[in-house]
Length: 71
Image (cartoon, rainbow, N blue to C red; front, top):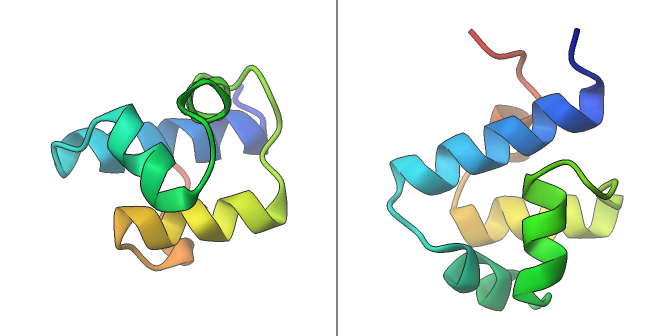
């Protein structure tokens, strides 16, 4: 069973790939390092609320899309 953090991380990755964005691009738009972004996307580090909203904005999605359970 996925934790909430893992679910959000998976959704971030899914949206990024669907938009054909690189990790570097999203990290730059979210004003965080690519390394920090990668750790969030892989679920290695917990995402702060501030970074969550910055990443949602960088991906161009409403934050609710990132907290929906996976299909």
